[in-house]
Image (cartoon, rainbow, N blue to C red; front, top):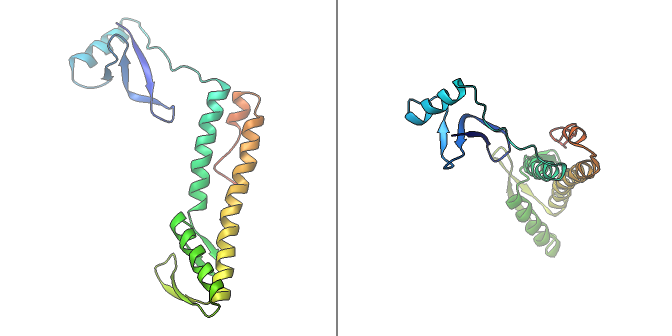
Length: 174
């Protein structure tokens, strides 16, 4: 009988379970069960579970790029200040704002009650809608620009240590 360390979807090892290689069963390490007791005895006999495979540089880059895309999305959708107003920047708000700007371009007298991030409403006229849309768009573009910088750095990483040194949590627009 032998066991291996297993990981979560992010690749981090799971601390409370192992996989029994013979049948693929996931065995809790500290449960009050026959399987857990057998694993603990196996360890006591001097055995060591098979470690996680070390990812290749290409695999590590793919994982880092996926984490980066998720981080950019969080920065993009956190909201921003535009024209002195705290505005949501989620994808639905971006689409609705675009539609409101189009309506205001078709009718310069168009005005709309717009819901701010704090839940309050404000009346936005044509000029203010355009300014708000430009502010939100600038925020979103800043997020993509930051992601592009980091994608370049990730692509240029020559080894796993250089890749690990690339900090994807900082430097985002606020």
